[in-house]
Image 1 (cartoon, protein in one colour):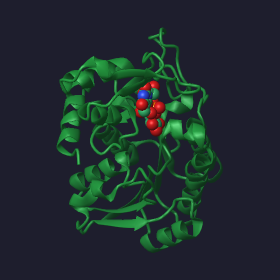
Image 2 (cartoon, rainbow, N blue to C red):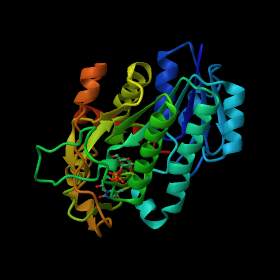
Image 3 (spheres, protein in one colour):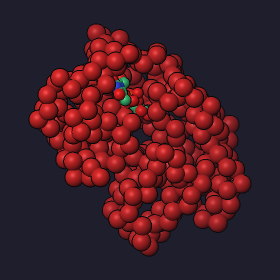
Image 4 (cartoon, helix red, strand yellow):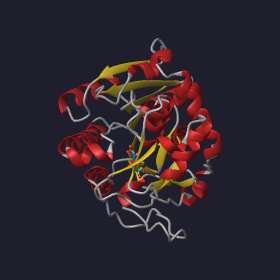
Length: 319
Ligand SMILES: Cc1cn([C@H]2C[C@H](O)[C@@H](COP(=O)(O)OP(=O)(O)O[C@H]3O[C@H](CO)[C@@H](O)[C@H](O)[C@H]3O)O2)c(=O)[nH]c1=O
């Protein structure tokens, strides 16, 4: 048996990852440490709440006492850190909680990993640490060697956590890896992010607020592809390394919104162009060739298929 701590497991990506691990590995015990902030929802895990290989603990990764006690009692083999404040718009209004959870919380986990000699720590990070790329230069991509250049308080907090993790690897030989993913979509995403918000507004015939002119580009990664990438990294990734994980599906925001409206048979007149996000990143585009070559990981979901399934999921789980 192996014991894995998943932090932020009641959130969107964390809950998908817990499902993925329990489905794939019958010899894994999963402990889910989650503070249950507004974005965490235990209903995401209601189908496995009685699984004998799963346990939920409510708590904050930045609470050193609680974290140390948990590590002492559970003796984890692997720790995967999904816990984070992740909403860029909220970070513009209230940056403090982003520093507390994303930076201090990660540092507490890293200290616990060292103190209790955990075999492996994985930090789930974001392509936003690289800043952005010009929209028109479609031949430019972020690689793992692209300098860190974050734009928002959110991305700056994630970049800080990555750098602290890298310093722990260099200074203490902490056995860790980092992944930087592009925009995730799929079931269980909290409807504050572009895709679920637009799906639910369209179902309700409400306006779809598109920032600026809707020309910003994001690379859409299905959450299940993200889970398989993290699985590959925690089991086969090289300690101390960063791996980019992209979806190979670049789209402008307006195109995404129009695809959703078309799938739901709703009129484009629901689109409302609104004030742009301050400091809005133009384009994220990620080169995932390292994880493909070194770990044999590939994207399985093309956007056209993934978005249809995601829309169906929100229609079925509307309530
Ligand atoms: C919520 C919302 C968003 N947008 C735009 C802003 C962005 O260009 C794009 C996607 O916005 P969001 O869904 O907020 O995601 P974005 O800012 O790209 O960041 C996401 O993707 C990142 C990975 O790239 C993650 O690290 C972040 O945690 C995650 O929130 O859609 C709109 O035009 N209207 C909206 O109402």
